[in-house]
Length: 102
Image (cartoon, rainbow, N blue to C red):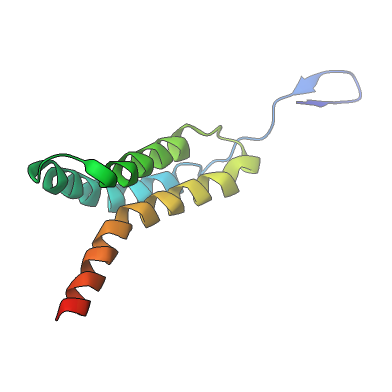
């Protein structure tokens, strides 16, 4: 909060497009995350991939619940990008293994 000359405190400026980065990450990542979750659950439990799925979900949640101030824009974009990276990580590993075995 900032204090003006007449000692009235102002709230920090809100970021008008705060929702864009979390929305793009959610639209791209949630369908793939749901597919990965269903495939992993069908093969006898989460095991070590639970960290990836729950980590990606928590990063998406963090991207949505960060304060809507302009100063948090970088943190929101970083959280959304890391969430997308974690979502695509198991798919990338599977593609690399398929390419190595071909």
